[in-house]
Length: 278
Image (tube, rainbow, N blue to C red; front, side, top):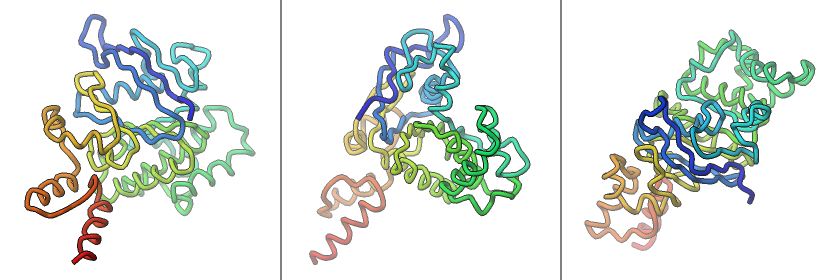
């Protein structure tokens, strides 16, 4: 697979001479990946997200999206169309009085022909399971539904990448599950996903994780590799997924669990295996 995002020795500070919010970060993301950026508040992960979309420009180093440098002013709108972004608060992303108008907003900004818009709007809303709400007022929707409409607004612009900056942080557990399930399905359909989060259970379902602390990438690997070092994560003020923690306690008590247990599905699989062996 080809590299769709390339970040090389990037540094960024909010004030000249101030502390670095992103400090010498180098990483790449391959097309089709589902990658998590994990870290506590203040670790620099949201700043990194905005650097990827060209909302911020690096003080040092380079950020390339589909080979385009975010410092190239002539390419910035192409970059933002290719790498859509969904933010934390769904209410801050909805601008119209009707769902279909909200999804149309981004299309208008990139100059899509009027006759092409209805098909794109319907397709995008169908992809997130919100086509039945096309004529509903956004303020009448739940938090999870609003976030799915925000995702539809990005999808309508046909991006190659979607960057989710703490997109489930303000949702209740049900809303978090429905949004994350939507995003996983979109990734399976070919969209590259960069998932910025501090929820361990979400990161555990991604293919690769980069852990940030004090503006730096301090760990990279698969979920199994990252969550194997529980003590190291706790030193970074992070935890492990609840099922991983439970598995560890059960193993201490002699329960012969096998493999890496990161999710509820993993735990159910192991419990069924043990039950069948009795």
